[in-house]
Length: 328
Image (cartoon, rainbow, N blue to C red; front, side, top):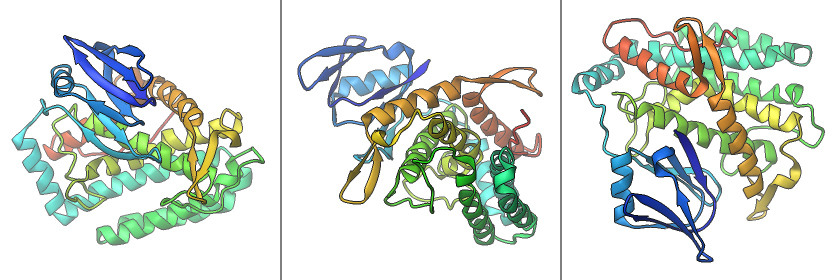
């Protein structure tokens, strides 16, 4: 099973048990729905109802991205793995501040571990930043509410971003500060695009478990937002996405020609850049490591689902949740 990314405008149409992508020029291409787990749409696309019925049958998620290439929403088949008991326990761990703080702190400890892991590989350039982050990390355990914890995490991340120029070895790219809406330079464009992909990858794995993606711990639960995906993504953004960005830039796989500016100062990856990024992202997600507890090779993508299973065990009082800290 794999993810499929669509960049051409057109229509997705079902005929019998086959999905066709009919492009604007009239050409038709078969979309192998039996082999797809997630469809990512980066273009203007029309659908028919029979198409959605087949997605339900085949349990395929459909993710939409806006003009800027950022995640805008999903269509997910009816959830098959549901448990009222797990959802009640998940809710209890949000309503109890002490329980919620513990889980939120675990997410932050894991994120900081992976930030420091990236910086320490270049400690000859990032030593002062490492020291500053280590000092702030010691404050995490004393945070008495979520707002304070988020404030500490924000300060840590600001220091972390200051270390990017000590990691990047390409004179065409320089990082001044994090800008989200909109990104105004190539590195911010890469981070924002990568975070969208990470968010949908986490959401897809959550849907394979009994977790409710709208009940979160670090980020505030909100209407029409899968905030648990944001929580779990904190673990994997520095581990997977930031390392991917450093590799793409330092190995000159992504170059300035792969960006475009729209609306005067909005910087985006162009279609060629997105395709390069997505190809390397999928390669990374399929890469395996020897899991020291499971004693078998485990892909980066499956590591996300393991975090979901660990949370469920925590809610059911089977095992205290300890967020992933890469050991390899």
